[in-house]
Image 1 (cartoon, rainbow, N blue to C red):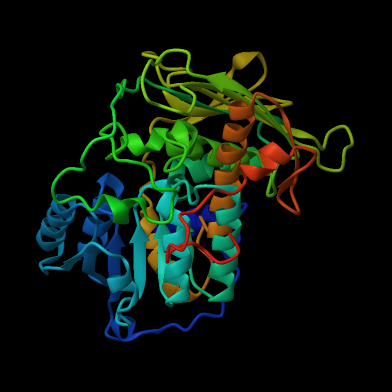
Image 2 (spheres, rainbow, N blue to C red):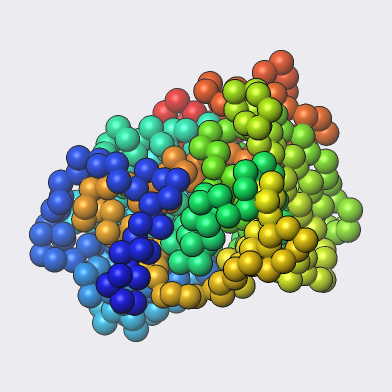
Length: 440
């Protein structure tokens, strides 16, 4: 990338985020940074967790000291990946507290199931660690707010794993929208249209050998193990996951909210959905339609609407993208896919501009996390950004689960006039568990 293009890219990367806000962090907060390398502990060794561990291990200015997972086999494979990428053999542990107790560790990655995202992040901040937490950042709205508060109180960098915030073509597309290329954008749409697998039905059974199920459940309510709620399939269970709206849909919801220019919560959420296709143990909708309204000042021209569509039984793509976004402006439309690129259409569907994904090259998302730690400035996917987008998933799930619309107060983060719905903004915890966040 040329110097001029890089300057332009860096300017684009600051759109609609608090990327220039200084956290007042020390530039060399630990021995690891003082020696020129960021010392990282990887918590959770599934697909994303192992990817992050391997990435940090392969960088010259970072090293992975730990890999952590309740599944011994997964932790072992992650350790092998780190050794291959970085040349060092990390310590293998199954309890994240071993990492948090080591003062030489500067930062952690949280690639656990969703129900551990909030507790692990909050505990890491309390231990003085910076955090890269996978999406969705939280399991519920209340934990998301506690994560933001922990990051600010302990002055830690906490970055959400919504990597689209660091994709050059997405940044450029958002800049084009903000420049007025398609007029005033009043509506944005996000969709998740792909074919998932039937997970089947299963009765409670004994956990696999080498898998510490009790530790995996952690602060969530204890449920007997069953094979349909294990690696990856935990996504579809209320106590552990957030459904596919939180798994994949959060990427597109985040882009939609970014392009729509709304930096608060919606005030009205109306969803319909359920299990239309899969006859299995999944608890979340396989078909989901959610409308969110941002009232602005209430005047004509200031209201904004965000729409989410999900069909995870669908074997075809929508607008050329199985997961994508559409931005509807008063002078045109912009279609965007994080894997495909974008197309901008003017009146009468005339193609005005387009850009393919990967043009130009850009620093990867984990690099933005490291840069933020070095500079003390908030990253482009700061925890507050992640919280606002994850909350869309949680609110959409609550509305569909109860079968009614919600009135939400963006400031207090409370659902109004519906005690049953308000109860679902939080979750029930296992009595006395050490990882239950204070104030949850």
